[in-house]
Amino acid sequence: MGPQGIDRTYVNYRKQVSPSPEELLPEAEIHLYAVCSRFPHNLANSADWRPVQDGVYECRRGSDAIRVVVLGELPKRQTTRRCTC
Image (cartoon, rainbow, N blue to C red):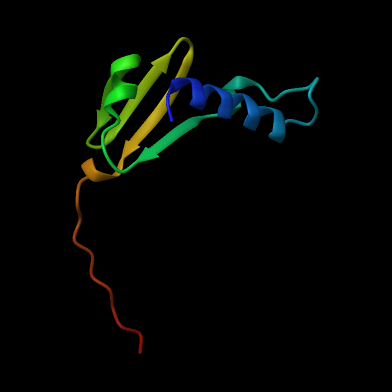
């Protein structure tokens, strides 16, 4: 999904969760997140982009900030599971 699709999704979501179409929730109460498996080159080339931490970026379009999580770039941690059999 490109920047225009994210904008449309945001507007639609804000309308759905607000008490009424005339009484929309404040923009400050809604945060945008995008999760992808690989780095979104097209999105990164079309907007202001800065790294926040490994695998997490902030994309700015106008006054909107979108936090982008790239799963393939997140640090890998070894986990162990205990069998509770």
